[in-house]
Length: 115
Length: 111
Image (tube, rainbow over all chains, first blue to last red; front, side, top):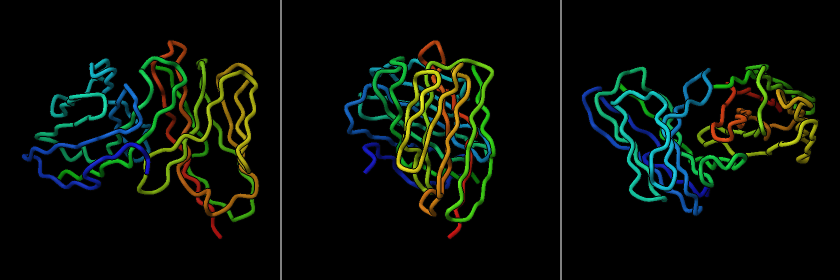
């Protein structure tokens, strides 16, 4: 049990589909993150929410749309994706963003394949 | 954005061998975190080093933060197959907000 749960674990979608990734944390954290993990590349920060407010959008294309209805839940809405968007999408949570050394607690990710 | 380079990218060794993984930057970080990611799972924090020159031990794993807080190393003694995984270093930038990850070192320990 990681404390951060992501669903679904695997997702295959066509380029014209619309789907959503879900993340839920039970750690009482106030910051939540979306990261993209591709082979042979560092983890790429996509979005940060701090106390439900988006504090960072790391130049992510508009075909990725985040939503944070409360401090425990985070969604990533996907539409008209490209094959190069295939990757492992990781959600993480932590103490409030900007508190220096607070580590990230990651979920087990959603393996996304765009066909 | 401050960059972190990890080496080697891939390492395959036999059970019982020792190894060292390096994490280097030209920039100063306020602290550095090491994570391990096993197949099908997300990264899990192993340790945070904060002070220049700091050494922390976690069983057979020894972590060191460089004196200038620009680099770090992870040394594993007598590696076990259970040590297999992707080792990630991540530096907290001196601004205190952004966490920068290295590319990772994929370690395979063969029985």
